[in-house]
Length: 530
Image (cartoon, rainbow, N blue to C red; front, top):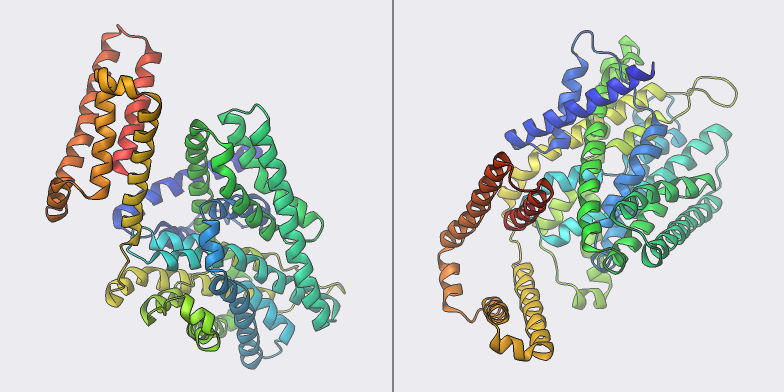
């Protein structure tokens, strides 16, 4: 039995890797491609039915994926955009839940308002990975990316809280608004407090104990699970615990990690996140046979109609919310109007259209109990599952595949501020190196050839960054020259790599020394290609 489970997991990981390569070849975002592939694979005769357990998603998959997303989110950008992020991650979640609830009650016979909010809480949160992976490599304003990533960090928590309140109401038959609101705040604040407390302990371990790169990497892998499980054990928000802890650790990483820890940790986490995301998205597609099997034959077409209507409502509600949430604060507050530039309608529409749903929605739907407290079957459970699956499929495939074309049609202009900042950073770093040499190695920098060359190199870097060289202007006019130069540098790395291979065949040099030189070439090539 254990061998069969291990073989199934390994097979899934292998299939995910192969399909990810194919998606790159076809230039389709891999979450979208994997969902479609999983859907097609599920129709192959003889394929065993693979069920997605909600406990596995919430405990195994969700903590590291949230932690990774939080780690790569800038706290400064997050805090600067806290108003639009809050309006989307909390306000829009509640608005979507309410709209879906009233739509479902009006359309589905016997559907109660509590069940409507249950369904709304399930499908309210867009998926972080889907939006960012689809937009990756496309020219998108940085503020749009920041808002979408920040929204996806918090909206899972608020939607799961709405879901739990609705579920408790159905199970108990009681709902008191002020108690629900107070509990919402309490659960959120305590989740954040637990996440920050565990993150601070992790910070002290990394900062003051004699760890190495492998130990540091292992601790970063363990920490999100500790945050999530501890918060959930005390019935607080595990999602907010992981997000708060991840943001804190990300802001402190430059103080506690050495260069080799950062290199190793980044490599390990990139691989882990890729595999987890891949398995999650292909599993979404594989769920269809089991979900459809739960529906009665005579209700299949009616269920499909419900799913299409609620999918359309979900998309429209986001568009209807985003525009007033963007422009009304500027009308009501003079401070916001003067402090923040008025965004054009095009990037606002991009945010409104980037509402793809994902695995958290499906896991929440699957976690609905089979029976009520009195032993009766949970009403409309299979229908809720089917609608959730259809909303994920419609938003992920239709909105996700249309985003690149939408970007071209909207012709959104991307500011060049980032390039200017990059040049300024290069200038300051080069000047810092020059200042240090002139202060501490003044004599050597004027008499020893190696020191002179190094000093000249940093001078040249500073001049290029400041735009003082005429050649820099020439490069700007002739971008193909810069491309050719970078291509030559990569080819030189390849030439040295070929020579290393010759040395291996000659067997005259120690393998350890050859490996060190290969590591150096790997880092150089990574820098050039980045």
